[in-house]
Length: 520
Image (tube, rainbow, N blue to C red; front, side):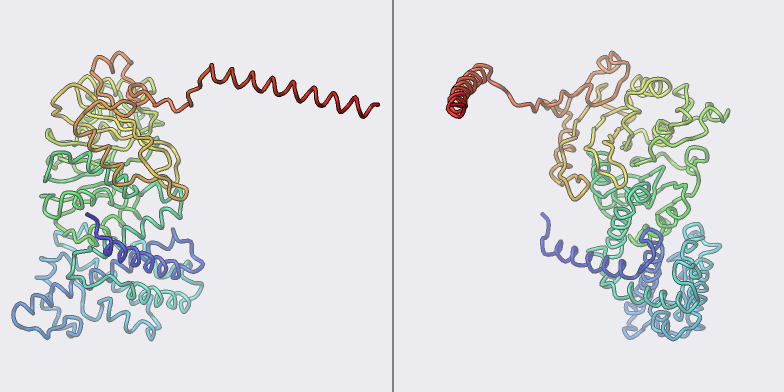
């Protein structure tokens, strides 16, 4: 049951946050400016999170008037080591968001102050377990960028506005996690920046409705999982959906992902912190997943959800080592150099636990094209890994109008059949994009769970049927589209035509009479 009042409050908060974020950027393109707004939001969050943690500890010990933000730096230093061990980082009271913001308007060297503070936060984690989670986290927050202004004074003016703008965002008390306001606001801002940026935004952001569908398909019948993994994790929104759907403690060992783009990798780590995921509960790496996977030694993943880049180039058979790579070797062939889609599928399958599920958004071409991709499909079907294929509506993603599909894979299927679902009509139109509504997602997941035949919607195909179709996995091959053409009654139509012809003759006769009279 949706709490309407809470939803309204949430929408109002979102509107207010976007108004602030939009006003702050001024002449700067929103896509370029997002790192500043999101980075400032992160700085505010970890400052408040640390203060809250320390103040609560003191209050529990009976010291109710204690306020870490008012403590002298030298006294606070004594708690550094313990806090780094517990929280993964440390911030001096003078370098907390609230104190830097209070002095910002009078600080002629605000750019240098912020640069120093960010460096200190990153350095505080050095040598600790959290080092990799904090290293380079503020790299994209360039306080000396011309995007902020042509002179130091103008840049500092903008930085003051940023601190005040983010400080004014009504994100509630950090102790109250009922609405998860920081994480929620971050996701919302990501969505807005991505939708306004078009293609460049769509490349790294999976809309919330598609994330929800993927995660629900991947967690059918499960109440908890060991961990969740995304081989092309972007800003991490897909990874975090598992926690939203299964619950806070249902992901026992955390969130794992890999991202090739350094800026997006930083956004992903920030996203983890803003959703209150502890530094010991996530492991995000920045490397090329296909060539240099970073989680070889981890236990396989029970849930894999991903929306990898469509049809990108990769080394393929140019790299002689890849055909012997244990991830790709079983299929006996590599994905084409110009289309790495199937390489992501094979990588995900390799990383999947024997009791796990992978739900991956795919470019439709990989389901029917010949050559190496057909051979890989044959390998997947011969080994009974493909649980289902769901055809999605077009125009669901920012920056691309193509109708994508989802491949669901399992290693321990109860049957040797594959369910095909045609969900192209399961959406509503919102502005220029289509959107999956909760009832659309429910219907798809319900039919997927029951593995039932539904005319014009779902078909459970046997292995023989798929192999007989040359391992074509396109949904349209198996689910007959509904005939939406109007039925025509031929007899009735003939009668109408006769009537029209008769009427036409009467009109001709009348026109002939008029012409005859005019000629006379």
